[in-house]
Length: 294
Image 1 (cartoon, rainbow, N blue to C red):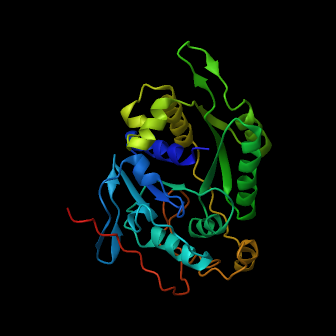
Image 2: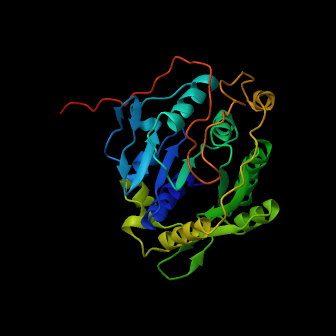
């Protein structure tokens, strides 16, 4: 569905408007945000906190900074939960205006864990015009309701392609994004066309919003960012109880720290809380990988 390229370019669009933006690449198994954004620097550690690299004014953290490009991440729920917790609490994020979290496909442990770490965050559903994809995306929205996250909008990616003849071709059909938005009772924030420059930018680490701002896809994403920024911050909901989180976990295991968001944290907004609370110790400590010697 292209959710990672949408996340990366949305971050760039917000940063270009002077917002303090951070991106958490929560797709631990299929991380791609560093590649799409063209991050060349590695994170460093200072005073026991991870200093995230910055690109185009955006702070970024990803599992790609801690494992090799070809290395598979094979973790069960508790280890995954702990790594995500470190992404939130052990990184020096400062006081961002926006934290964009690139989620993996599906409704598994990552979604449950992040809903606990950031219980007053909002969910943007990325889909394509194809009705089969729309039904898949709807399941993510149903999960959000289960864990008390508010869905605020739908973004339709790969909506159409404009050929050399100037005609608009709906390669993946039409109407999926609008239909999903209507079902969820939220706005369709925008339709991002399928363009070669968007794909090439993702492959080369040159986000289209920064490097091809006059393209159709860049203009669409900038408009989505504008509409998102005009929305009211969410009211702070109550996190789901521990027992419910355990029941929702596909592994059926006790997830450390779930249901214990603690008292510290930011007021309602779109930033990172200062502390999501205590957790059961797990023997995991992420450290930036060393650059190969030349």
